[in-house]
Amino acid sequence: MDTQDKLISFQNFLIVATSDGALAEDEKGILINIGIDMGLTPEDLKPIISAETLPFRLHKNAEDNIADLGDMLTIAASDGTIYQTEQLACKEFAKMANISDEMYEEMLQVALNDAGEEVIVEEMD
Image 1: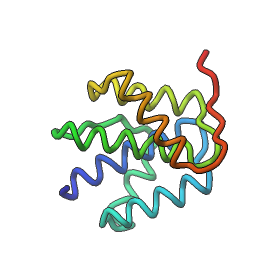
Image 2: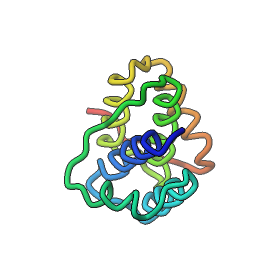
Image 3: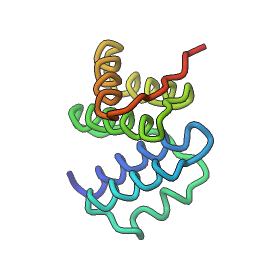
């Protein structure tokens, strides 16, 4: 994955992490670690983190989009609650990336299982 693809992923992760109106410390720590693990520098991340609004961006490679969705669901579960806004954001991304509802639900269950603790999933209105 080149730097541009890493930045796309990081931007997508940030959108989900902030979709509940706040960036929880757990989410922030995970995001920073993900960015560093991806080989991005604080200078790479700063324009994305400081942007007021960000759109989801898709990779050219479908597998990268699927991987992003899995990571987004993990980030959403990291603070112990997957809020409606996070679910809507993840579902919006899945729809944009042509990821089926069935695959989305399977990936959500994996994220919940990986969380290793009781994660509250807010009911959708």
